[in-house]
Image (tube, rainbow, N blue to C red; front, side, top):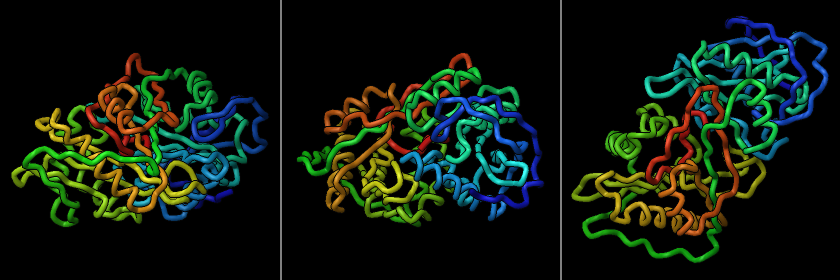
Length: 363
């Protein structure tokens, strides 16, 4: 179990467990006895290096126990590189400073309520710590409705959310298909060419197109240069698998692929490598031309050429147009991530061809 130093820099809030349990991340069931030592939640802004290392150790322990990564890519990038200075990190600590749980809170924006994620160390579950940390997260939201992601649609997640007054408002499907089966030839419309992304040249044009393609999806469409630069620094980033479509010298669409290894922030530790349709987007003016389908196929063929046995993607369950496209390409539903909220309404429809990991609090 990890030890966290320098925890006194944030506000400390005492909590008493209530006996509700938790499993992986926001999940689990079965009540248990509260721990013998008192608990406190330290609310911090910027984290020190040892604190980040302790949280990542906790995440690794949870991933190893559960077979899935308990925090989204967005939160993991925030831990590794920093992010919005208004974000808050909640550390659930024993009396001796041992880290028992972690929660991340993203601030509200003009378009979205605050969002959070949490994880409890496997050795400390079924003792009411999940509910204690969730209540602290709700308090830190300052009375605003909270959107809370649970990775994996597990019964315990729904039970814990319900115990805190949260309801299911959104689901994000993970879909998969084999790359050993036949793939159709991509068919590009006349006048459209495709080339790889060039770091140092294409960032601004890509951000402009991404904002346009995901105008109704602020979690993805609101990406900044910093968001893109963080991913360009990740070990998995490969511009050869980042495809840009152009028409008359102007970007018209893109397909950004990703390859997950066995131990990264992917579908689960210890699994064989798998490709991902990370993000697909097209200019609204190109919708109906078949560009999204062609770009998807180009990326799938690239991933197969890398020797990968399978590919995955994420898509909002309300994005029926994208789901139909992916099903026509051989994808089937594999698992589900769920958003809970205590707002009276919180569902945001999916967007055309919105496949990817940038969920602002999900993958």
